[in-house]
Image (cartoon, rainbow, N blue to C red; front, side):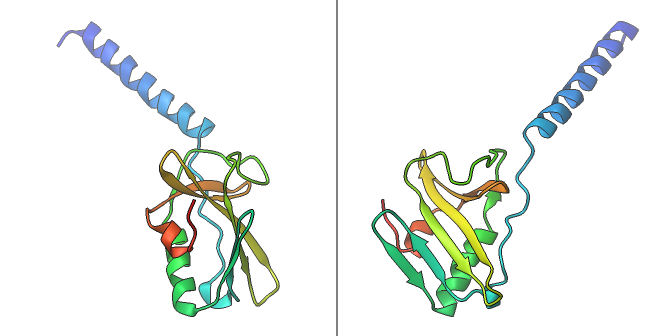
Length: 136
C-alpha cells in the first residue's frame, strides 16, 4: 500500500473519531433515570386531563418501577418542566420521606417514552400503557 493511501486512511479514521466525539458531546445519552427504591414508594399516582389512578399494591408498583428502570436512555434532551408533546400522563411517586418524584409518560410516533424533567428522556418497552391502566 502506498504512503498516500495510508495517509488518506489515517485522516479518514481521525475525522470519523472526531465526528463521533463531537456528536457525543453535543447530543449526550440521558443520565440514568432517578427513581426511589420501590420499598420507599407509598403509591403510584397517574394523572391525565380527566382521570387519576392510584396504584397501591406492592406487586403492581414493583412491575411498573421495573419497567421504568429498564427504560433505554435516548439522546433527546429534556429541557422543559413538562414534555413538549400535547398528550401525556403525569406519574407521581410519593415516598415515605415526603419526597415527590414526578415523571411523564407519553406516546410519540408509536413509541412510549418516560421523561424526567431536565434529567432525560427514555424509551419504554411496549405494554407500559397496560401496566399503567391508561389508554389513549
